[in-house]
Length: 225
Image (cartoon, rainbow, N blue to C red; front, side, top):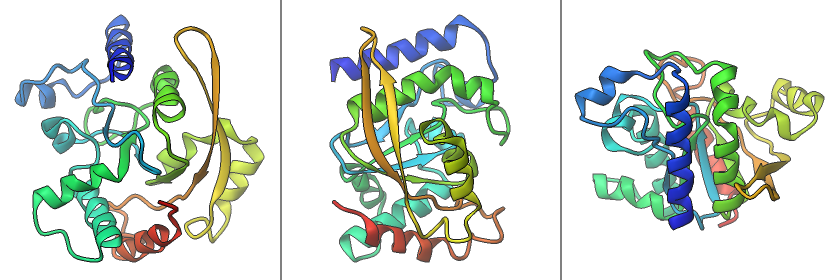
C-alpha cells in the first residue's frame, strides 16, 4: 500500500505544478484539499473495474468514485448481480468495493458538469495507466459512457476502437486491448484487458437511462470472478 500512496502523492504533485480547471468551491464546501486526488475506491485484487468519466459533487464529499446518483445505480446493480438480492443500506452499497475497483479518467472534479479536455486527460493518463496496469490485478473493465470508453483509444489501433464504437451491438460485445504503463523507475508494464462498454447511467441520457439496470445485469453475467 506504500507504493499506491506514492502514486497518489505523485498525482498531487503533478496537480500543483500547473493550474487546470478544478471545481474548488465544491472541495472547500466539504473542507477537502482540491489537489488531493480521489483516485479509486475498491479492491486492487478484484477482477472487475468500473471506469467512469470524472468525479461529481457526491464523490468529492465521500472521497470515492461512483457514489452519486449514477454511481449508486451502478453499485445497486452490481450488488444485485453478485448477491442476488437488493441492496438496502449504505453498507450494502459500500460492500461492492470488496469485489470491484472504481475509478475515472481524471481523479478530480471539473467545474460544472463539463468533461475534462483531452489535454487534462493526457496529463493524468500516466497515473491512471499505472493504477490499471501495475496496481490493479483484474482484466475486465466496464466503461460508463462515451468519454470513459474512448479514453482507451490509444491501446488498440484507432480504426479498431472507432469501428467497435460504431457497432450497433457495442453494449453487448467486448473489445480486448493491451494497456501499457511506465513505472517511476522507467520500466514498461503491460496488461491485456477486456472492455465491456455501457452507456452512462445519467437521467439526462434519455435513450438508455431506463434500460441501464437490465444492460448492467447482462454485463455482470459475462464477468469472470
